[in-house]
Image (tube, rainbow, N blue to C red; front, top):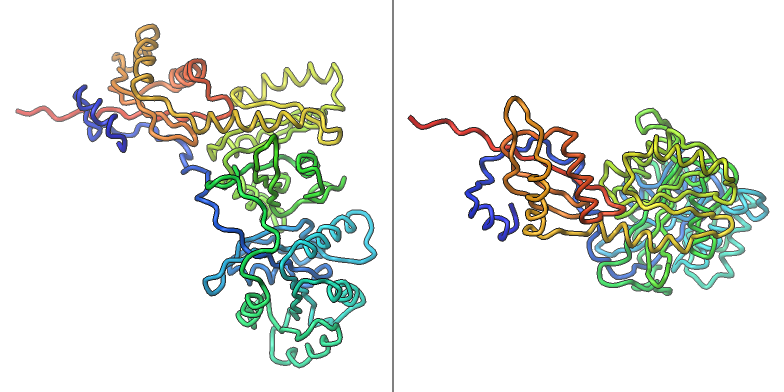
Length: 481
């Protein structure tokens, strides 16, 4: 045990922790989701270009790891997605964008608007052109916009996988953006030289410094749910501007999208994630990698907002997403979206569904909202604060054992194998999520542990946070002759 006071208290009771074994260590007791202190803001590089020229492949090569979702079809990336990069000891941020087209309509117009915004807010811009195709009319249109920009612009001729294509990149000088730099996102050819040029173009500090909220940085919130439930719409409503592309086509968001949003005077870091249709094991292609990114976003967050379409019956996908959050031990807020479409009959049906399908997360915070009309979105910040306060809550050992002694006297553990187990001592081993360890003389039935958890919540709250109970059973010592 790590707490000196707990060790002293156990010593007074004649309890040696070494005599106990873990009967059932808490599932998924991962470390705190709260990240380490935020580092100083880093300069931003926006990667732009027409659809399917290999921007995300090149981004992964520059990062040195597979972060951006890549598939051999145009239009996989739709939002502007930021990644932390490091080269020669310098940190900077790479913003991957969707395909930029000057005369786009519908969904593609929204994607192009995000790319345009990335160019306006970046410290430098990297235009990616497919060297195997050469400069197209779209490339020339993007180049005209960039030539009028006051940002440094670099030109990358990608898909240069062999020496023969290097000479052909000379034709890209006519774009008027300086030297075209041949690079292969797939094989890494020329990527080191490109990174050196990027560092030369980027300033030491970003032009636009987004304010920080304390030394520990903003609390991280993951927006998760099934496709087309309104995650991006809710993020845009909370932010008061278009942060994520929204379209009636399900699955518009593919990569997790980070956004700093101020709610009720507090800065939060929201992550809009891809909608989860299938289990990760059964997904394929773009959907498989999107599912992996979504799970990683949940694990990196401190609290998750699970959006559920209140106008439709609770689906298996909804329960699967909630189960994923519960497994990772994150604080949980259930947001029932599209409440403007709910009539009296649907409310009664939803109440029955909650009692039947979501009984295991009765402790979760619940908010009825409408991303379309803005109904009750102001209640999101208080719900997040309540859930995180429970996630961080610690019960003093003395208070915990005093309460537990009264409870055990009134309702002792059930007899098992002809003997009644005794709970000798209890301590809260960690927070985030709150994890309690019970030192006993015998195994505690699952039903009794659920009873203890329920009474813990009745006494100490923990609204919005999962609770882990671990039982350590004292081993029988061999008798000395």
